[in-house]
Structure formats: C-alpha cells, structure tokens
Image (cartoon, rainbow, N blue to C red; front, side):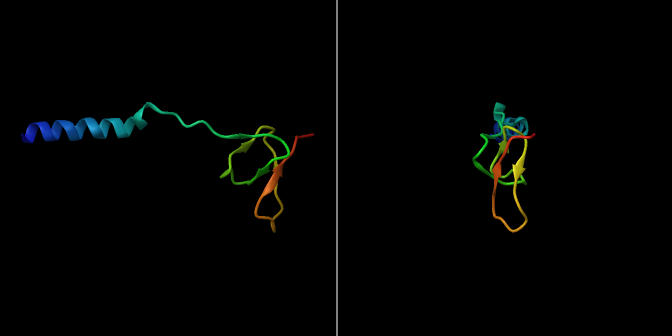
Length: 64
C-alpha cells in the first residue's frame, strides 16, 4: 500500500515537472489592435507595441 502511494506520487511529480507535454504558444496580436508593452496581452506580430507612460494599453504598430 505504502509503495503504491509513493509510486503514484513519483509519477505525478514527473508529469508536473515535464509540464504535462503541453507547450504554451505566445499570442500574436495583429497591427492596429490593443497591446501592453510588458507582453501580458501577447506580443505584436510586428514586435512593436506603442504605449505611452500614462496609458493603460497601447496599439500594435508596424516597425518602419
């Protein structure tokens, strides 16, 4: 009984350590859509989020 509990616990810990086999893919935001410079809403497809200091969010813009 004790051994099966330890084995189950070890298997569960191994699955958690591997991340369950799922990979997170970052969200790509198209130009003209709202974004945040810190990336919490995802990343702009262009790689550029124009957000002023006093704004809660900015806008994805193409890099020129």
